[in-house]
Length: 393
Ligand SMILES: *Cc1c(COP(=O)(O)O)cnc(C)c1O
Image (cartoon, rainbow, N blue to C red; front, side, top):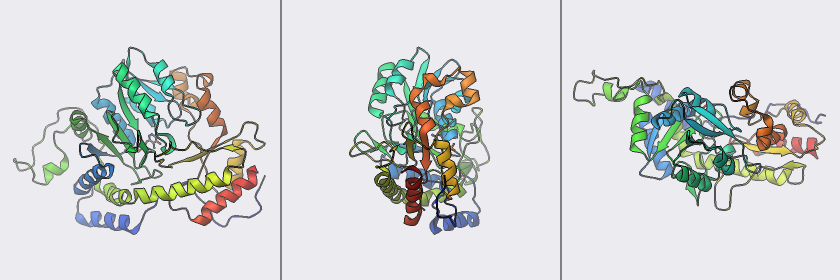
């Protein structure tokens, strides 16, 4: 199957939206002489809290969301013998951080409509060893946080939100993800994410204890960070420090924070552009034999990090053929995700079977992620629509 028009340019699946302000701020950082964690990382943490609009939050900038999830679970003292419930339909980072600490991820299926963790499956997976739940706001749509918070409270469990897709997303009556009543929330600034710094992440928490432990462990377990030591803000001339734990090297450099400052300022505008693209796709694909992505509940915000359609069962074109045909048409796509129960490590280590995760398995076989990013021009959106329609109508 092919499409008549030959593309002159390739439309990538994802592209960061980097403006002149980001570039100027990086140049300023380079000229400043301070390129690792310092004043801009501090400012980024402060402005991140302001963005979320909750004065009682702590924000801790880290080198990735993976690092942030690891630190959050470490601060909760998750360790060997503990279980953490994770959705099977996610990126491997969500589960691997549990393994870093010698604990066991317990995999559960997702809701077939939203593809976010199924609260009933969470309830059924709780054992005396369960310590925490790690929900993922898949594609930028919030999980069923009301039920999850209730289950956690009933069983004395912690919630750490994987918010890698959820900046900005709302839940529970218009509250931004990051401000809900959970132990911690972790955002990603990976190159393809909605706010991108190349690599980077942010932990937010209301707990002073979690914040203090994460700050300590993000930089070698040293009792104050490099900025304090070398900026003369100490009373000993700045040379003395103490290692109080075997920490990690998880700090966010100012070079990345410089980009983040300006990305954050445009986060809502970029979201609006993605929402407009999602609306155009919804409109154009509503008559095709596909399932459209779940919408946010009325009054809530979807971050639209991903736009995932599912081919109807019995579609005459298969998912893999569609990916190849779109590639021939010069359009990049992806699949989010190859579920964790299909990856050899998780499958074999925990004896996972496809039949145990029917919603994730079925969605995976039929799903394709289409390009959705603020750098897309109207003509790019039209081109995706034309190509998908030509192949599916
Ligand atoms: C991208 C992603 C991560 C990891 O983010 P990094 O910043 O690359 O470490 C974790 N979970 C999900 C769901 C992701 O999409």
